[in-house]
Length: 426
Image (cartoon, rainbow, N blue to C red):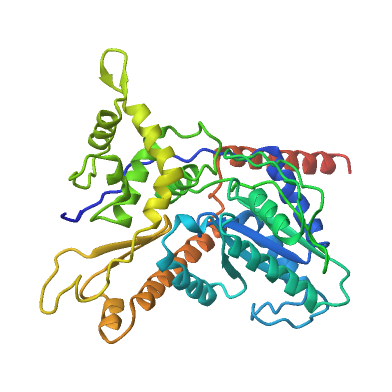
């Protein structure tokens, strides 16, 4: 089967704004909540380990660590160690990303973000839940004079916070335990901070579930557009804010990037079908295969798009995650052979890189590095680009939505009127 050599990014719409009042309320409450918190567990989606970072909460978490004695210049060093203060990053739904990228990602994050301890987990895997429970218990036992350990769980909508906490409770409390939190495939079910949930009896460990908090503004241009579609694909944005054709278009593109030779969606099509770039051609084949016909004997492409997206959210994601790492070395670039186009590689939906014969990373491989080392180096480059882009967006005063800008102008106008009124009444 011939690999795809050119995979164009589809045109994506301007991202919508979805930031309900309960999200804003929690963001304002977070600093005071952290004064009573010993461990923060930030849950992200393994498929979007960078996009599902909650930048809205980063400032409060940074201040919390500094107030608890962590060194501002060396995030791995603690100057004052008077009590527990740990930040764990749990990449949930690990069964939906290929295993070969997990260790390289952990090492790349340790290098680029040393203040974050990364743990991959899935509530389907008892061993993962047991290991996470042990991590919390070990932290509690390191501080013998702390009567109880309070854990705050935060993250984007629909990354699995409530589900993971239910699994931790079942693992940590012996005997039959009721399901503590309601869960849903739709984002936004949890809208208030939960009551304390006991995760362990000896030592005492309690946890709070919190509402998922979306970014107030997803960003401008192609970067913001792609960020919004990614979050919608994992159902992190309220259903209906994107049409299924848009999601199917981006999903087709991303699955082609992840495996240009044998993308996961081929399981939906007749045997022998070649990889497809054109969305209409792809949806036509699905509609024909599934017998999706609407009135007038026309193929129902909209229904095919919805089917494709929902298939990926269920068994399709598992199928895509079962792929193996295509070798990065001589089999891709045989000795003394010129390759006109670089080879595209990817992991999850946030990592995409190119390997070419003149690439320094490929040169490093030829000098004896392993595939995993090459993947780690490429991931470090991706993480660095993300960090630079995030800093640029934070500095850019215009990087806000039209609604936020309107509110900002209204507040500025009110401030000018108050100042003018005060001056007149002196």
